[in-house]
Length: 313
Image (cartoon, rainbow, N blue to C red):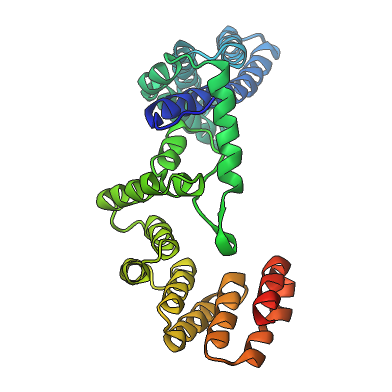
């Protein structure tokens, strides 16, 4: 199954998956805290309050592990707040150490966060994706992780770790580079331009747009975009290497060489900058200087070294 252009549905599937993951992760903490509270309660003399709290935490923790539910996170949150308040009051009353005060503050915070996120989790878990949609999301994650543009530059930042649904939302909002990688160039460029209209300081989106413009034979437009990106982030190596590439596409080898050298002063290990510098030397007719980059690329990225060898021949 593919989502096509239905990015809203993709977002719902991603939120559902991460909401379940968040609840299960929080459940582990609840089980640990519940076990601690239960252990304290059953120590002689038996204290019923910690026992009841411990059993409640264990119960809601197991509930959220086996069948994540937004109601479970509310019960969990209220219990944690009660535990935290008990630990703080007990310590301040002379029955504990500062360690228990710190633990109580953490429990109050964790419980409050859970309750405040009830609506978010209710909305996310109210959507019930099909198994085929969950499988399609997993496939998309793998596609994004492997996505590369030419010369080994990452097309998009993405992560499958992290425990908050909003992390997915932030990563999925900008689909332009991914669409270009998947062959939907017009839609991808449109998405990137829309993204820049919303976030004009997004350097990654601007670099990805510039790369698409270079590949479409429009280096002049790409240069304008990259100069804008470098005003926002002067030390952006991807922006510099893409600018050098655009200058080479316009036949401006000398300024391109200067740009690649600037990128290497920032990061001497960037293989794309080394390849670009070699190409600038080739464009100026200096094959010997270009050949000097081969052993460097052999160490940094052998694939690019082989590409350079073929271009020098």
